Length: 341
Image (cartoon, rainbow, N blue to C red; front, top):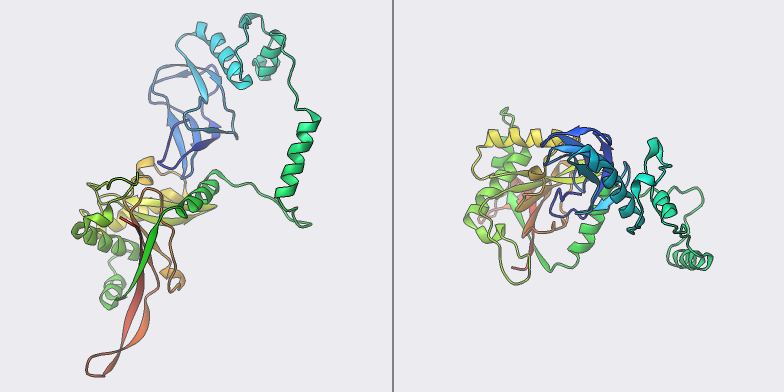
């Protein structure tokens, strides 16, 4: 199971593009994996034969665990199948795999087949252990209300939950500032096709050029990591979760190219077609809820980032100047949430 993002700890097999026995070429897509960010085609780095599928569709595996076995020759296929069955059973029985009769689909050798050939009784949890586990579970979890429906987390939702809990262990401070946005709103309203998200990302990137420490992060509690690139991650709501797409080198791109890139990333995110570098290379995050009329909110600092900027709605505000005259200006509240550097 490959690590498709910096926060990924496990992945779910969405589908196997190839089947057992198929010939594979280096660089060919073999399996689709659902990470905490997106669904990604995983390629093989070698030529060979897909000898055994260790993790079937719909199941999960931790990063680094084998999900399939590759054989160089047809003679190695039987050995690979035995290894797959052995890994699934958690043992290495001394049996001749050629004499094991497979009872699985299409004659596949299952863990039970290997155990039976080795004379190992299929282990079953004792009734007392099952009762203990059941009692512990019932005592710690409140029973669902009548008519309620329990839906397990998707991989993405589980990752969001995990990252949210982890963010509570990071010491942060928050600071808010009201910004007059008349010029920003006027530029956005011109028919130039530039999105507000691109404008905010560009403004943040240019500020980070002048203040590189805000673009840095503290990952080990002992040192600062100054990032050579300014990659603005922007939160995007998608079906069933949230993902931060990354505008790489936002300080070096002009407004129109940045806006075009942003639109492409949103389309790819909602189609679950993002590549790993398009969601795991951010150095600073922008979260904008202004389009929903939200005045202010506290964003959650993503793992590995030094700061996140929460942007509220731009609204007309009555202001008084130094001479006592009143005027109406558009203002938005910007809240920066940063790790204690």
